[in-house]
Every structure is written in C-alpha cells, then in structure tokens.
Length: 177
Length: 177
Image (tube, rainbow over all chains, first blue to last red; front, side, top):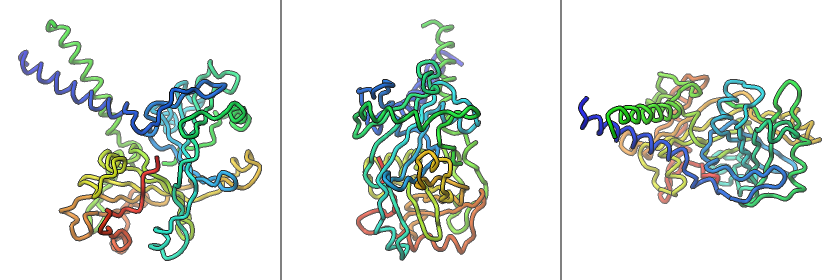
C-alpha cells in the first residue's frame, strides 16, 4: 500500500468510525437533564432512549401504565448472558406511558381489545455501582418526571422494593427474547 | 505524522470501527432465518432484536399479548422526524409475548396488578419498498413463529388491516418518547 492509498483508507475508516460513534452517542431523544436525583445523585443518562429493549410490562391499578425497560450496553450483555450479579456500569431505564385504549385499532379489530402508550408518566433508572451504592445492594435509583428529578420522599421508596435477594441480583425484569 | 504512527493510528481506528460495526451487526439475538415469508419474500432481518424501541402495546382478547415495536435506523429517523410517507428501507419489527401475571411483582406491590412478558408468540415485520410492494401500499409484510415463516393464508390477512390512508402512511404505531 502506498502512502496515498493508506491516507485514503485511513480517512474512510475514520469517517465510518465517527458516523458509527455519533449514532451511538446522539442525545437528541434522551431528554437529558443536568439535575441530579436526590440521595443517589443520578442524572438522566445521555442517549438512553436509543438503548436496546430488555422487556415490557403492564402495571394496572394506580400505575395504569404500559412500560418498557431499556438497557445500556453493559446491561444488555449481562441480561443476554445471564450474568449475576450485574456488573458495575449496568444501567436499566424504565420508561412508562399511560395505558390508553386505541379507538383507531379497535375499529380495525372490530372489538375493544387494543391498548397503547399514551402520555409519558415518568422515567426511572437503576444504576449498578457496588461501591458507591453498597448500602442499597449495589444499586442506585432515580426517577424523573418531565425531565426533572422526583423528590427525596419518592427516592426513599425505591430500595425497600428492590432489595437484592441472596441468590440473584434483584431487578424485577427479565430479558424477553 | 511518520509512517509508524500513521500505521498505529490506522490500526486503532480500524479496531474501533470494527468493534462498532460488530455491535450493530451481531445476529445473536436476532434468531435469523434464511427462509422467506410467502407472498412478500421477506426474511428475518439480521440483528433486529438490537433495534431501538418505537412503542409498546397490549392486545387483549384472542391475542392476549404484550408487544413492542422496534425500528431500524431508517424507521427511527422517520418516526422521530414525522416523515410521511415512510422512506423506502423502513423496517418495523413487532415482537409479542404472552400477557402473563407476575406473582413475584404482585407480592411486592401487595396486590394483583402486574403483567409481564411471557413466552414469545410471533414476530412480524413491515418493510417499506414503494416499488416492490406497490400493490400493497408500498409495504411488505411477514410473520415468523419460532423463526419459521407463517403460511400464505396468514400473509393474505396483513394488508387488508394495514391499508395506508391517503393522508398518512398507515402503520398503526406512533413513536412513544
């Protein structure tokens, strides 16, 4: 390879790498906020809305929502490989939207059966850092409503429900293939 | 830059690009199949399980499922920018899992309210190609069960419900931010 073709190849590879890294890092859909949630000091992770899907759920009763759990790269690898405990750096995002009937879909189906994502309710994050969050099973917790962190009272309620069991690193959610 | 440092930089960039491209292209979670679905000739897109989340839904009645719609890069850009009609190359994946109660979650919540993703039911894809699928509004359709395409009779039922309206490129799903 001569110097000219080497330069050309280098440039082509650099452009490909840059485009690829931008695709991963773009924060446009992440509603980033610099304001940290109380107790755990967690901010909204840049670009979380681009993360991959872990699973979905429906909470009835007061929640009345449809929800999706997304994971960063560390989380997805851990879920897919069954790694327990989850490694430090794992972040799980829980998005939720009001559970609303879809008149449009029901019309096509010919009966009332379809429920879709309405307005977003809040976003929660679980961050694994076994040293920083040693007092809460290695997990830090955060909730944001319209991009702003919920109060301290809300954050005191996270850990009592998310206590890691001895034999598993408890996070409720399992990967849905 | 001398020849040695240029070679080193080239290698570093090449490794970064390769790692990045592998992350996008890995088919491990995609249950890829080479068998094409009838009528539209669509195969399972490699790596679709790594695609980003568009939205979620619950279909009651016979379906009795929780579902998630994922989009390839073309689809996500179109959804986020409100591009209509969807550009050629758009692919929407619809994953679905049985709608099952979670005894584990209900115990923590203290009441029966939690429904999670059970066993996967089937996977559907909508592929936009305005020329190839001109007879069906520009969309091709495919359903796979356990990695195998459903039959022709099933595929004849796709388009009648997914008829694009005049003023929008009808795909049921809206992006849930």
